[in-house]
Amino acid sequence: MRYSDFTIADLQDKFHLVFMEDQRLFPEISDYELPKELLAMLEEFVPLALAIDTEKARSELIVAPLLAKLKLNLKDISLFSGIEFNVDHKAGLSGRCGFILSRSREQYRLDAPILMMVEAKNDNIKSGIAQCGAEMIAAQRFNAQRQQPKNNKIDAIYGCVTTGSLWRFLKLTGNDFYIDATEYHIQTPERIMAILASIAIGSGK
Image 1: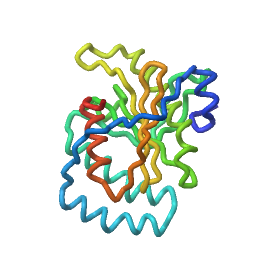
Image 2: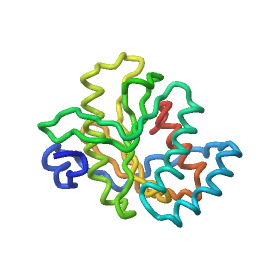
Image 3: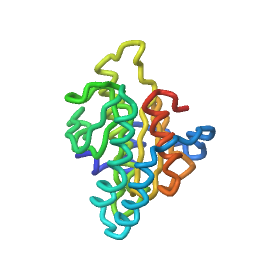
């Protein structure tokens, strides 16, 4: 079993997650001021990605540029794409992850993952929630095993399922699994980047 094989029932029955679906995770966050060059790039790339309409195009033309810019702006995080993240084979917590943000400058070795991102299959956000949840559980266990220093303690793991145009954020604290009641559209990139930045610097609510 791998991350992509998990279902919502697996998360509830195997890992005893308690689902919370009626809360806004980022109700008071201020918009992020995007560089003009990034806005111009998105203005060009988003229509092209939507016209090509494949997962690969959306990933390369929308998701990756946003995350790369976040990494370059925030020096104390690292960004990983398409790496194997094998935490517990017996529990099925293994496989390749789309994107991972880590609260560490270390770019050559994954340390302190804080956000796991899954690209939704067939533009179906709901279908990606189980996979992302499984990756978040793996990140939670990974961090517990690493025994992070007290000044870098990670209390919550975040997740995001995206089609490139739509973004849905998740949060895992203990066994409580929150699915943001709000879905964000790429037409408001300032809000999406603000949420990603708040997660990266540890100010997410």
